[in-house]
Image 1 (tube, rainbow, N blue to C red):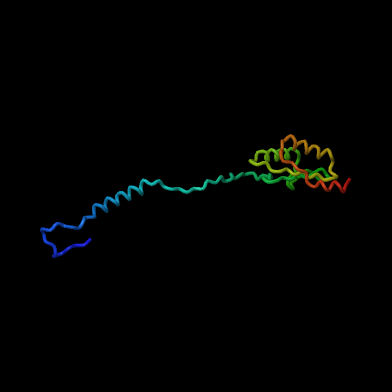
Image 2 (cartoon, one colour):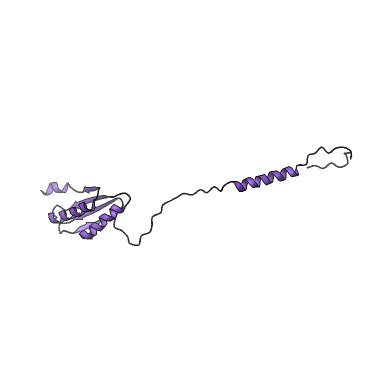
Length: 141
């Protein structure tokens, strides 16, 4: 904004445009646009696991049932009885993706014990079942 001093006659019209009201209107419009634009929230939705008080012996990938010659049944290395085995198998069925169950009986384990374990597995309705260590039977018999 310039100001002419002394060179202008009072009878001449003013040739400069007054831009102050134009700037005021532009600022008001700018503020209106800023207020009316919706706030952009960038959020990533994550389903976090719920903490559980009792730690579970169920592995979400694979679980292993072993039977030794003395008739001890172990679930992932922990000795269990048939009732606990049934409980663990029900917990695996409750998982979103059913883990693989690996059964590894010792060649000298009693057939009665292995048969009881397989009956519990069948009653639980496990869909992914595999036998581990079948090559050990080739040397025994």
